[in-house]
Image 1 (cartoon, one colour):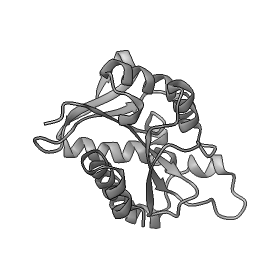
Image 2 (image 1 turned 180 degrees about the vertical axis):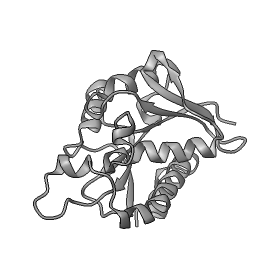
Image 3 (image 1 turned 135 degrees about the vertical axis):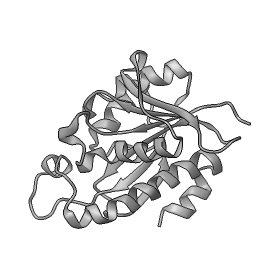
Length: 193
């Protein structure tokens, strides 16, 4: 049984006003993982985050689910502090986030890369001093017409999308489970459709 913990960061903005936003998909996926762990989020003052710890199955890697209590563009500080508190290096950090360049209801898993204009990733990269952490990139697609990107990501999912969203959240949670237990290559071949 590996006792090396993984930090799984779900990106989003705190508070009920943002709960159904496309930008909060990381929070939604971490909520699903918390349900699978049979845990509820508790405050970690040292990390300015809400945390759930546990194993999905006996012998599986220990997960520390993290929901930063800061706004998206200030996520790096809480992520760095939480990682330091649990002594988890960047190579065992998974960040779940919305991705404009991937169609809604698809996802991609990767290690490292740029931030592609995503303020949460930019903040984490700056705080950790590296971009070499795993990403579960959950597709939200591009805004229709000339809608502003910032306005689009801070809008709730459409009625049609909300019907599919639970399946997308479930699949993203499966991808996180696969990543920490089976590795990147197997996870990519299964989920990067």
